[in-house]
Image (tube, rainbow, N blue to C red; front, side):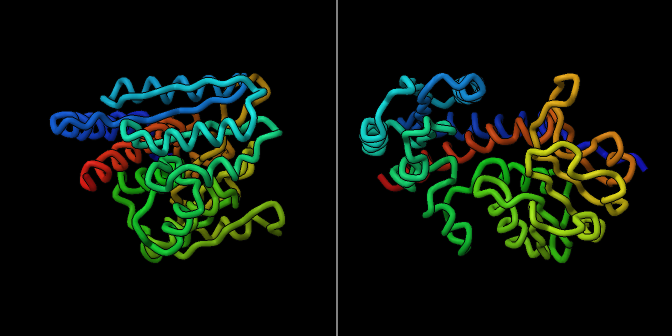
Length: 285
């Protein structure tokens, strides 16, 4: 068996086209959906991510504001800027690019963002909404993974899903989203003993730890759906995920490639959350 690929690039194009249509509908009502992206410091990876986010907005009918600040910016100054964006009616989503310089408390900054504009889905109010099944914004990467299951028509009800990783950004929200679809969910992490014994029982595996080859072919149940969230570099410097793609592809039923899998979905779901925020704001006025 060779696994079928879940093409994140193709799915992203479809979803972004829907965003552009929704943005055009809002503009026809006099509302220009707006995202503010705040970058503090000169982290090269962050600069690339931010550039991609701004371009994705512009390509799909969203207005985007990029604010760049030196690494020396004080925490108080950043918090004041976030508060100003909270009050700006032209801005519907606020994203503060992480990581922040060490002297700034990232959690404090995230909590300063108005929940109605928390399009990254990192605020405790967003986490609480996900936990309790209330309306809110879902973190973009796991939300993108859920869209991938949807795109292949995969029924999660009653399936055993194993999430490798317990971060607040991917692992924990991923587990909650799977649970909401009535999957039976197991979360594995660095203290898990005999990871393979658990993953071999799984109908679905989501690998999200940032470690190469954490999932190999002998750890996968034949026909399983494997979602690779990892972003690493191999010995040749090429982008790779957490999954031994070549080996696992011969066992799994479905698999996401790296690159071209989950990666493009993350920015796409940021656009989806931003358009959702703009629509909610328009309905409230």
